[in-house]
Amino acid sequence: MQHAAPRPRRSRPSRLGLCLPVLLLAACRGPSLVGADPRPSSDRLPPFAGRLEDYRAVDELLYVARRDLDAWHEGRVTTGHGLRPRSERPPPGIRADAGFELRTAHVRLRTNVDWEAAVRIAAIAETHVRLLLASLGRDLDLVFPDRPLEVVVHAARDEYIATLALAVPGHHGWTAWYDDRSRTVHACAEPAPRGALPLRADLRHELTHQILDNATPRAGRARIPEGHGFWLWEGLAVWSETLGDTAGQDTRTPRRERFLSRARRRELTPLAQLVRLSQDEFRGRHYDQCGLLFDHLMANGVPRGRRSVVATLADVLHDRLDGDPYPERLGLGYGTLERQWLNAHLAER
Image 1 (cartoon, one colour):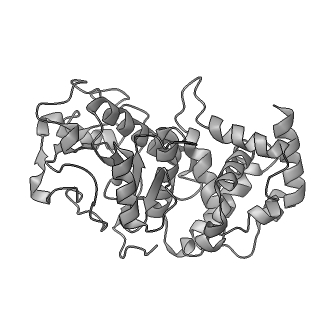
Image 2: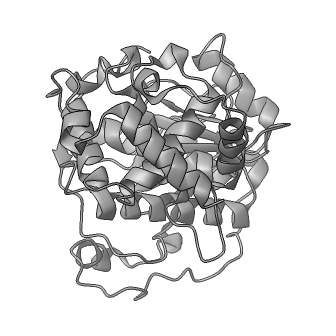
């Protein structure tokens, strides 16, 4: 994909507290989300189905008083203080069929789903940003752009597919995608006919790509699609799909079941080959395989597993990767790692 030119000024992320999102809503008269302008959004409001002047700011929906925002960003407002919405009902004049916008501390969500679904989706997105930064912000030296992350969630699949086709001719019907030209995540609330992951999985996955894309220099990523650490780029995104799962939830279940079925049939791609695949060569089964491997490594299923993954991914993102230092950092060859991982994983099932 063609990259967008100059990056906005970046700043360190604010102190992250796990709390309900701060929501600011703006209404729009556009009938749908199809055909959104692919260019990066303005500093005030993003391009939508209608013109910029069609937006109507609703100040009373700022659930934290404006005077409290700086204190909240600086961590001087305790969790839950002043953050709960005044009403769970949509404000007067807000209609899903017209499309509307929800704003959290780090995310701007444009959608035409119903109000309750929109609030849930906004909370998933904001929580994911905070959890990912809390988990990996220091290790990957992540910084944040000054503008919020752009997310569009389409209510209907035909509308979503139409938008995808405009941006990516010849696409394969992905259930969600990150457009690096406009720096926007697109997802669909209506599941795909088969093989669909939960919306929260797709949203978290693409948000991870968006965060890494916004938070690190583009130089290191130019070679990623060619196979220069692509398994690390995608493995982390798949691993992140469970961030924010509550007790009893397991967003990874569909991937795990597919992976185990292939492993028992001995249909897995050898790890030494998988780590060299390009984006064009990656298939659904490779995403499943990378994700389950990342679970093992990030949980230190082998000594130095997490540290080696994070250090090598940081080299990729910051254009410092020379050759393939991962096996040496881990102290294991890919063949040995694969045998130990599969033996441990299959023994648990």
